[in-house]
Image (cartoon, rainbow, N blue to C red):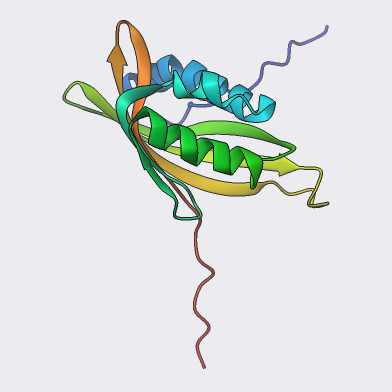
Length: 150
């Protein structure tokens, strides 16, 4: 007798309310990843609120549509060039009419020659606008290597 193999639910460890929110938000993250893969800054901008702020892992800061566009264009032309992006929502919390999100951005690049993806953690704030989730804030960061003791 054959058994069906089902992919593990990406948000299985969350409580039911958080899981529901994460499932609702995941298409937004899938679309951002797709825009990054295609190098499509114009479409990516549509996923942010007009007053959004993004700070790149390189420290570049952009506020408003023009600022966010500048940051995304810079990242797509450099650290994301020729790569594949995938986002996994790790935690989500409703805060008033907004949602606080902790996500993992995995970047796989044939250019680096490494099989392991670059892992960037992202803290985001999103809200629904005209029935669709949009990002208000995005703060990607990487973890530092632990300090060596003598």
